[in-house]
Image (tube, rainbow, N blue to C red; front, side):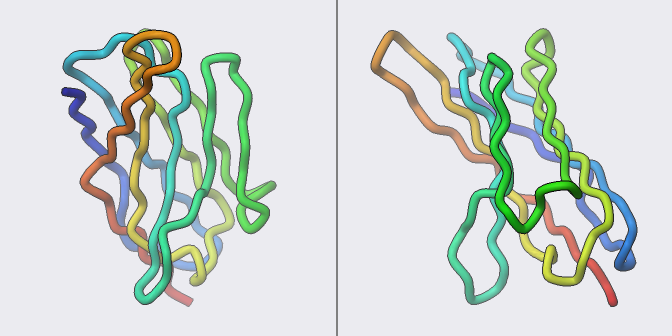
Amino acid sequence: QVQLVESGGGLVQAGGSLRLSCAASGSIFSLNAMGWYRQAPGKQRELVATITRGPMTNYADSVKGRFSISRDNAKNTVILQMNSLKPEDTAVYYCNVQNTIKPGYKVDYWGQGTQVTVSS
């Protein structure tokens, strides 16, 4: 099992910044993709940003140029720096990691979620 501990959510005014952090621990073999997803009330969970060990990054169009994802492989941590926040960024943000047990066999883990609220 892999445990994920998220931190950094909160309330911020539009135009402000927040930094989310997610630390993985436990039975880690190899963490390939790490990322953040979000779910707003009444909506489906959606991808925000992902990063591989490469590292290669991928962002939702709605956050490109405002959010930045990074990782610290030594600490098994993934960071999401969110700048120029908008009210529509309000959601519960979830950390996700893929633990590669062996080639072709990966297990997904999710954090408990952290609330981000952006006031107008």
